[in-house]
Length: 415
Image (tube, rainbow, N blue to C red; front, top):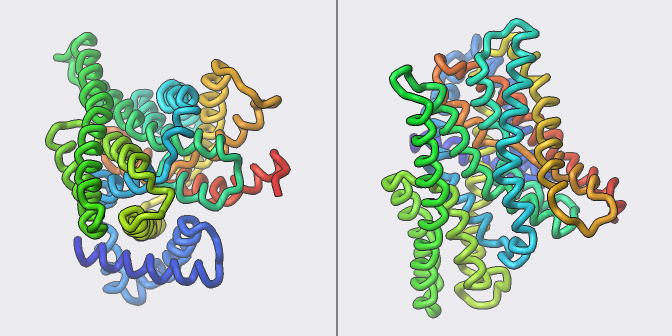
């Protein structure tokens, strides 16, 4: 795995330089486009240089995307992103963020699942309804990594950016719980009653979601106390933040609680308590610099891996057609799942539909959806779901990611 990680990191570093000097796109989008272009010579080498082709296939396989993301770099990226989110600004948008991250995910899950099931039947693909719901659950949460990386370049209102950031930070944890609950139903045998399955789902929610939030506060508090006791030693303060993420994630796995939610809460707590955005003291500067660099490194690795892994998929016309139609289904479901919760809130703006439009188009999907799709076996339509997930994610990051800033400028007529 170290060899795979090293090669992917080297490619990410090279592509980052190319993007910085010539493409000048948002880093995540530039890296993904370059990775997709790299697939062309890799694929052509299959018959000419089979050993070279096999080497790259092995690199991707040994990297183990699911384990690398869900059990590794996701915690680092969520903590790094949450560190710089203003808690007071987040609190002002708490109602909308809560509704989007919970009710919005549920609404989207069932709309995507239902429509995907219906469309699959129309075009002759076998996709059981419960499996379509699994796809709805894994594709509905917006990806905090993709969202926060691209929002840095998008020129949108601060309050709107806070809504999108806050939702994306929390709804992936909720989405994983919803996905796990549907997975329990999909894999349940006839020996389990509806009441037993319901009790298991309720327990899962308490353990994963509520447990993750409480645990995140605890490790964040302990980390803060350690940082505050090391004001004269910024290097050790940085080590404390690393220990919070690494030790905290390991503890979350052992306790069977949500590591993503715990990292978000810990990052928010530590970042706001030490006022990291002020960037004045030695500790603030050291932590800021370290996590910004680590964020760029892991983002680069993740999006290069997403781009390179696509050449391992064996597309057929049916999968491509369903994946293309799924793009429209997911965007429609996103619109409805934003509009309905948003209509329950009071708004100061004259035309809330503008905000709904930005929230809809800014709801990007990314690596988390792919990682969850990779966890599905063939008995759960894993291959079909993985293929259509990849198509939706590529469209989301490249098309929506490139155009969200332009859409905001057009709607709000910003300069």
